[in-house]
Amino acid sequence: MSEFELFKKVIVGKFNNLEQVEKEKAEGKIVHPIAKHVNSICNDKIDNLPKDFNGIFVIEESYYTFVDTNRTNVLPHLFLFEETEEGKVKLISYEIPKSISKKDFTNSNEDLRMDYNELEISDKFNPMTYDYTEDVGFYGRSLSQFGPDTTFLLDETLSESRFEVNEILKKGDRVLVGFESPIIYVREV
Image (tube, rainbow, N blue to C red; front, side, top):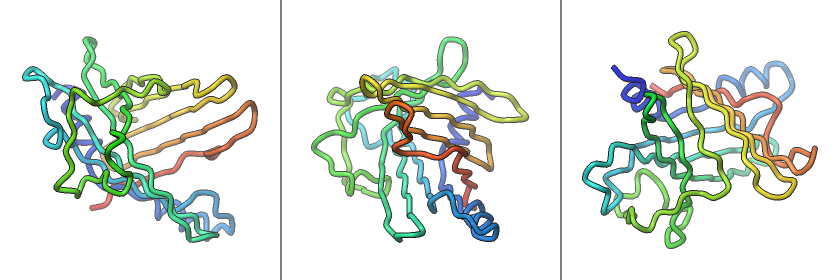
């Protein structure tokens, strides 16, 4: 099985970090929000895909509930994953179409339609290529320049059972969003 075929199985599913949050509660210091990812391939929601299109578009629904405020942030993303000539997996971030609200941009929305010809690659996010090893799984890291002194770091490790994500948005030396340690998601069964 190619790395790309394996990746398709690993990226899809529902993931949460309840184990991590419970451990932090037991240790008396909650660092991370309660987080959930819902990832599904959405090629069937995209009109006008080229006939020879081999990539997969994935809607990643991210939900972050902050324990101290009980407020939930919803952050959907549209990603294209494709196989490189070297057999690696490459992530390219796309903008959510302006005509679709965040609330409606979900995997469960049966009426959701997008036109491939109108999709726009994010001009802020540097594409990320994953390296695969059997003992770790897929690992990728991307550093993007979001402004003159604003950077975004995405550091990800995916395996069949876990999904570790560290996202840090910095302005200068100040962390605006993110944590020193990754959010550790476990696949829901």
